Structures are given as structure tokens and as C-alpha cells.
Image (tube, rainbow, N blue to C red; front, side):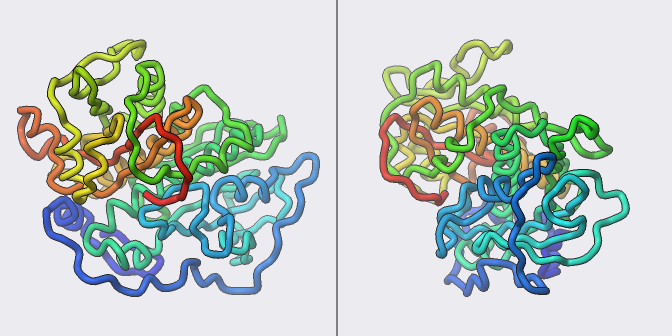
Length: 383
């Protein structure tokens, strides 16, 4: 059973099966507060000392809202509802005193919740949970896959912010073994006496070798449709390679393209080129599967994460969706670096890609996607 901080148990296998069905959500419900109601007064995050982790900049580049509405956050979120909540386990080497804190992304403030656990390492560990009500308010029974994808996106935002600030590669937990927290990111302070070392159950993703700059990260907004224009092969290969490296071992990746040779393409075994996996125009079918979003049929390309069979247990469901969100976020940044327009697509119904390609049904479902094009447009942060 899944639990959020609202403590409502959820049978994740059952809710995923329902989310994948053609059933439409009912009427909307109140979303509630856009920020968790943390106890105790808020406090500002102090400036970092010369040997401290710059916690203020880390959160500003990853989770903070850019305006009072809360829409313009660096991490993409379905419907711009931002259900992910963050608790910070602060150890030594940070500008805040050691302790457990709740983070308020609208005010860029923290709330002291108590002492840290006895095993808290130096630096900060961000533990991510969700307030399901925010996403359920709009997406109804389709919410839980989106909640997990959003958590993966938020995890990737923290990972990229740490790398942009010059930190060692963070330790990222996306193993799916726990419902609370769903994911965690540990960033070590810039102190050579405390190098980042792998811990039990914590695994660093195989990320892109490109380290973003702090100025690059606020620009990763989702481009509103339409997204016409087929990406050049080198750019599409780079996006696929980034996703494949970051996506874990449970997912496969391909891209639907149009043009004179429409079909599905994937990376060759060595990752150095693209090869055709299947011939034929797939984008109209993808548009129908993606909650009927007709614009997808005209997108230049659609990157697809697929896997997560119908009989997957809760840890597998969590793991694949968290990794899919993480990988699509990194792929989005790669796409922008190659001059592409990009927009994550998270809601998929009846999207049994394996069965559509002639394999056994129920084994290979679309989990997440990134629509790509060559047109540039005004940006907003929605999926």
C-alpha cells in the first residue's frame, strides 16, 4: 500500500491499472494548499560559508517557485500542480544548523522540524514525498502515475542543481522499495575530507557527462504545443542516449518520428547511431493514447519510455515511474541544449506499445514521454 503524508493507503497496482484504462476522470475537486502546512515559524536559509554547501542556491535552482503563483518552478509537473514535498536532513557542512527541516518552495524558506537522525551524513539529504490531493484534484484516478513521474522530475532537478553548483555527483535513491520517502537525493558539502561514497540502497544514476551551468537550469520550461519540426538525427540520438543512461534497467527507450520514413527509432547497441525499430506512422496513435492530445500527432518526434508490465508489483511500479521522470527531465535539458523545443507527456491510457508491435499484450506499456520539435516558443512549466 502507498501512503502520502495524508496517510491514505493506495493499492498501487490497482490504481495503475485503472489509470491505464480508457475511463475518464470525473469532475475536479479542490487542490488544497500548494504547500505543505509545516509546523513552526519559517526561517531564511543563511548564506553559505566557504566550506559549506550552498543550500540556498541548490534549492533555488531545483525546487523554488519563481513567482507567487508557484507555477514557474524548475521541475516540470503535470498540470503545474507540484505535488512533491521536500524534507531536508541537514548535517554538518551546511549553512543551517543540523536538523530536519520542511521546505516551502513558494517562500524559499525552511521550517525546523526537529533534530536529525543519528546517522545523518555531512551535507543535505532531500527526502521527497507527495501530497496526492493536489494532482488528484485535476486528474482523478489517473493521478498516481503522474505523482511518481513528478517525483522523478523533482529528483532530477535536485541532481542537476548540485552538479551545476560544482558538487560531487549526488547519491540518488530511486529504488522504489519504500513508499515514504519515494525518493531521496544526498548532496555532500564541498569538503575533500568528506567525499561522496555509495551507501546501502542509494545508487547514483548514470547521468549525462554534460554538467549544466546555473544559468542553463531556469530555462528548462516546457514548450506549449504545437511542436513541429523533426529533430536532426544527432540531436535525437543525444536525447535518447541521455534518457537511456539515466533510466535504470527496467525501461526501454525509442522515439516516434515522422518525415519520409516514419516509424520508431532506437539506439544501436553501442549507442553511437539510430536504427529503425518499426516502420509506419505512430504519432496519431500516440496522440490518442496520451489522453487524446491531438497536437502530439504533429510533433517532430516523441521520445518514449516503456516497460512496467501489467503484473508489476508496487516496488517495480515506483521504480520504473521514478526513473522515467528522472530520465525524461535530464533528456529535456539535453534537448534544450541542442536547440530543440520539448514538452513532457505523462498521462497514457491503453498505451500497450508491445502489443501494438506484435508482442505479448500487457508486458510493455508506455510510462512517460517527451515530445520534441524544432520550433521555439514562449515557455511555461506544465506537462
